[in-house]
Image (cartoon, rainbow, N blue to C red; front, side):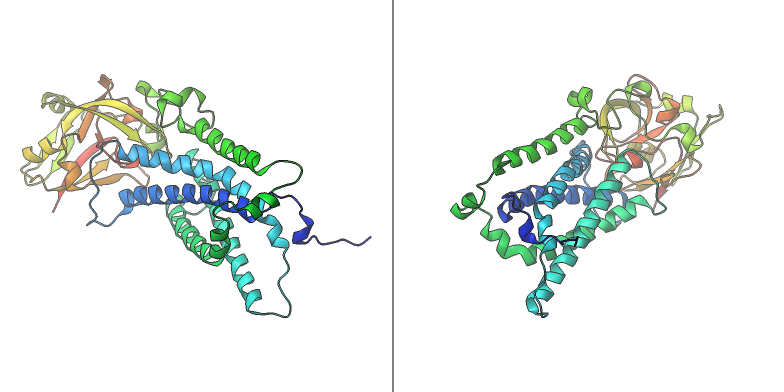
Amino acid sequence: MSLRVPTEQSFSSPLHHPRVATVIGRWLGVAVAVCFLTGLFSHLQQSGPGWLFIPTRPASLYRVTQGLHVLSGTMAVPLLLAKLWTVYPKLFARPPWPPSRKAAGMIVERLSILVLVSALALELFTGFLNTLQWYPWPFPFRQTHYALAWIIVGALLVHLAIKFPLITSHWRGTAADREASQGTGLSRRSMFRAVAGAGALVGIASVGQSAPVLGSIAVLAPRKPGIGPQGLPVNRTARDAGVTAVDADWRLTVRGPKQLEYSLDELRALPQNRSALPIACVEGWSQGARWEGVRIRDLLALCGAPMSSRVRVISMEQDGFYTTSELPPQFAADPLTLLALRLNGSDLDLDHGFPARIIAPNRPGVLQTKWVHRLEVLP
């Protein structure tokens, strides 16, 4: 008995059709574009050049963009699977022989598909594990995630260039498309509904981590609103950061034109301000909270530094990628940016950065440094 290799014609379902691939491809393209642009914004927040101006308003902008980043990436998973199912018979198309220009084009097309699908699958898989804060690989996640995004964009542009004539011819449904869709089994309309429903379902089941109104049904979300010390989730605990206790002789040092030093009681005696700001983390979850503390701009004034100063924030954290952060001038001078001492009406829990932490508008949670013990005014 001989093994027969299938050909493209072996797959008779009318759902393996360019019109179906084009429609699902449009949806997947939107998800990839949103995911890429919002991810680029997050990367620039954390590693952008010093001259890049990031606005402080809207105060919840990062909450929205990063929520969309994780949501679009999650919804892209069923869309990618549906797209692959629709077009996989093309993989059995045999290149013309002898080799010709058409055969070379087919090879380039398949190589672009291989790179695109591999990079996109790896991007979505590692991105999902990042939301769980599980990193079972030796390479740095954020830098690799960023590099993969550009590989995906490049491969996608090559793929679109090759397939542009086919895409444009099936962008709108034609009479020939409708005739080709006739057959037994699942109709195209039913398939579109099923794919859209699957994308919507995984989106609704995960978006509750950044939309509290859907928190009760966020079964795919690793963080739930309201769960954690003082009603706020925690990513990195004090124990993980090596901050097991804060001595009674803790002092905040401010290094500027004048060097200042404050005990916790002395900080509490300074004019206190309130800010209602969310914590928005790169893993996609976010939650609003009420913060109280001393404005960074007031500390700049007390040490004789200009409002245009950049401020380095140094944590008591023993090890990690974010033991320090920098507040650009627009953030340091913003009246909502606080050295927070209280959260939701009570002193900070140790896991939330006791005795003092940074809270600023439109900033990733990893830059809202906890366990602060020194501020340095930079030139």
